[in-house]
Picture (cartoon, rainbow, N blue to C red):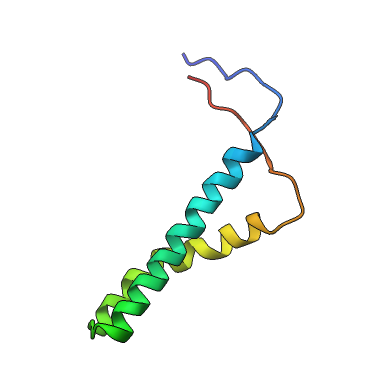
Length: 81
């Protein structure tokens, strides 16, 4: 029989960690889109290589929204080990 997890209040995560994660995502996204786009335009890469832009395109909107929002970092439940 498993025990139900104890209810704990939500804790705010460190805002520097939250922002750092999204800065990393922004750099990854810009690197993917810029690198693959440059390779396609100037290095005669085949059009199939453009699919490698997709991970960068998926990450960019979320990173942009978080980094340039006026709100604080959201409340997250901490991990229990």
